Length: 301
Image (cartoon, rainbow, N blue to C red; front, side, top):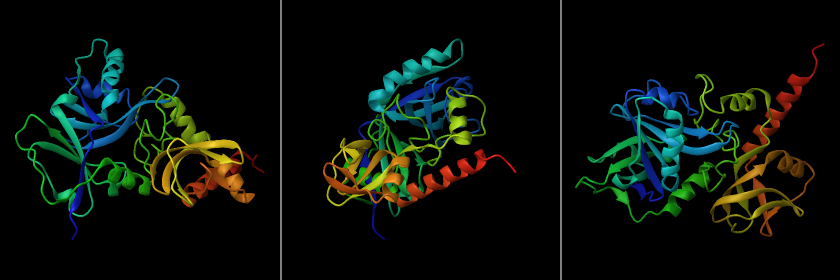
């Protein structure tokens, strides 16, 4: 059995939400259901604008009398401010505690069985092959790890995400610009369609029930190595942009309707002069969704 892989995610931070009203506050704000979340368990979620766009994405972890939010470190302070706008008179304390925590990801054989004495850990709820995340109290003296391959870097972790087609906010979609469906939250356990109201919920529900999602973050592959931030083109018309890259594979925010049309017309998609193909499953899922919506729109005989 090969050793599990481990990487410190230096770009991640932690926000603490504590107090007797912490669950009620988050339940009314974020895209996923946090009621009844067990100690140490986590859900993938986002805080949206009233227009339904993702402002912040994070993991919500039950901890003590409140929650820890595993969030992009550069966004932690802004998340505290945004949550505080909704606090009003609620008994809640919201704090950026990124200086006291480190975050690691472990994946591969044996990753789920390893535990640190100084860390909380939870299975990544987006995809089983993303393994386990550890929230490490850096104030503890016990900060060792054994049984892991070394060295592992953020590039190794990005390669894993790309292989699974799992996008990351700020790299594969822009905060304030993407809807949850476009960022694959509906496919990666990031949104509940059965919980009560939350900020932006009406737009998310409409996209789930009435809209064909034409743009998504999807995996693409190139005939040669690809580059981040290159446009995906049909001829000279841009239909998407590349985010995270791993050699010839990448994640791109892409107009699937245009990509499918190009495929049916035998037109070549390119990025940076490199011919690319789009994940077959993503295109077929879009085709099926569009066909189902068209059939539902036909008048009954």
